[in-house]
Length: 96
Length: 96
Image (cartoon, rainbow over all chains, first blue to last red; front, side, top):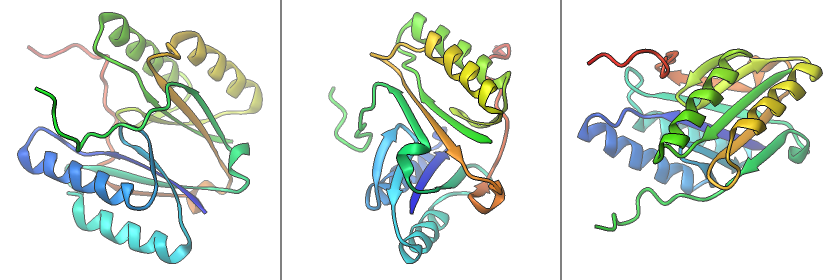
């Protein structure tokens, strides 16, 4: 199944920036980044539950927002993408 | 049908920030903001085509990314939300 993960993690604090990096890393381990805070992950039920568990262990539910959408197959009937689809490596080194 | 709209609009330029406001405004006219750049819109096919047309007229396809996901009913079987669901008014006056 295809899961769309969208999240808003507050980056006003150091802890928030750390959570953002860890959430992105978890998502990257399960799928593909399609926008800054949007990932698409092809997973089975067991992988989905593990992904969900890992993400919930990272976010601060008072500060952050996490949404998991399950898309029905065939996926290409349910997704339309426009513009600049680029995978952004926010965890990469900052170029001074 | 429920449409999930996610977008990344480059805000490095004045034109980009203007596009961001206009894209958000169009989405607000058709649905509910659930994260900074994620909206959920309940629309029929005609409304969906109009929404899509308006959004494509605003984004810069070289700079911005727009994704439209169509979710199958019943929606609550296909959405899981965690954390802080707040509607953010980015177009509101900045409080100095």
